[in-house]
Length: 284
Image 1 (cartoon, rainbow, N blue to C red):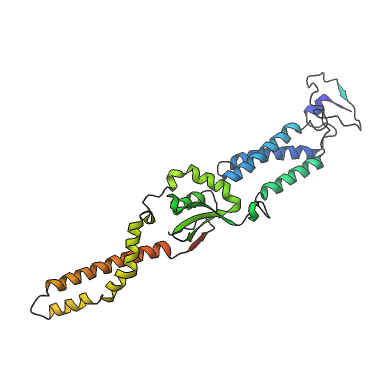
Image 2 (image 1 turned 120 degrees about the vertical axis):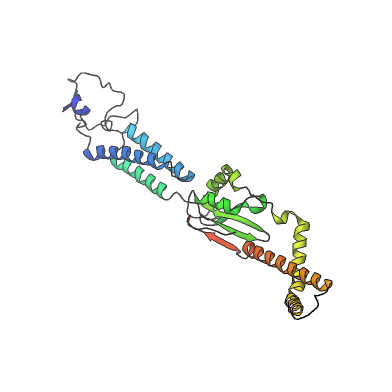
């Protein structure tokens, strides 16, 4: 038999020390979760909030002294009120009391769910959690490099793939929702800063014509400026106006072709670039 004062001291018979420690662990973990929320990704933050709310509910409902006692009983009763040990457990809030083993089982399931929140197995349309899905395209006036930079800050793996004349930003299927939300909130940051070349068909046709016809012809006469220069040095007369015009035109073609080749190599040689760690960079 124990008194009301025993209950207030946390030493009431029937409340095990391990149960009190478990309640303290709930409060400690809830405080730890609160400190991790600012640096967590949106998906991780959502899971942490769910865990924090459940821990708060358990701590409030099954705190020290509330394991077998009716929550509606008056704590201001006289200290002379005696509690008799009985085999019949009192209901808590009109519901059967929960054993420490059952509560631990619930917390264990919660811990497993939080640690492995990425779903495993088949998903909608047969996609798995690790499959790549497209969330943005450069043709939509989006800079793939800027989009990846936004995703890296939240530890979301991404890659850029080249299909036809367009670049696509892809993420894992499990990260699709948070990634789309991030890019939507960073719309101004990921917007392309310069007009895309393929948006001007006549200009693109001119580039293609130059690459396929004009540039090969110009490169075939790449040695003409050297020949003209040697002849001019060893000749008393200066080259004719026609020779100078041809030489200047050839040089211009070579320079223009070199610039186009360097630009195309930098832009299109890498067909697929995969980035799995935030500290890696991608050159587009």
